Length: 223
Figure 1 (cartoon, rainbow, N blue to C red):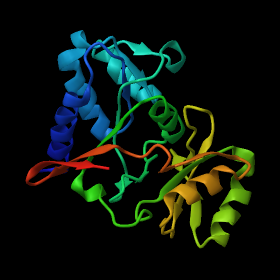
Figure 2: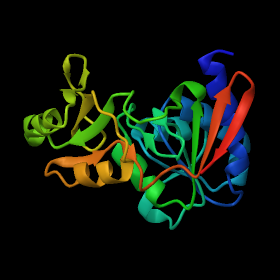
Figure 3: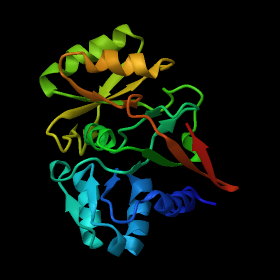
């Protein structure tokens, strides 16, 4: 199966975790787009969704799914999102779609995080994928130096030759050269740096379940 077919497979499989009658939390990215397409087949059974990005909001609305502001609803039953990496404990690196801060907000509002990914995203140690960090622009170079002191190389993410601007009006640093063996401590420490809006390590809001698309079908990992 192609990677695109695997994404469609797990997007469809995630429907069984959607609670009829309850608003669903929806993430961002190419795998989540497959879930949104699948969700449209049961849109009459859910009031709507809380979205983690402008891009997902547009796709949901285009398919006739109502989008709520996070402040309009209480606790969500489930949040469904992809991952750039996931380890054997359910810790993830996310933010390839530049929506990591809002993804964490919606994940924190949800009782259960269901990760949907293809098997290429499974890793033993986080750090193979460049780590996204959302930063206030004026702090960029100082944060670059702080990562350098840890052995990492941080570069500003560009779009059309200019720094990418997130939905929150900030910039993204992509950091390579790290091995994140203690995700909880790493997330806590980096988030404390002045100028860091959020870091793409999802340890406090880790996955409860991962639906992993493989050549053998969907493998369910419980954490």
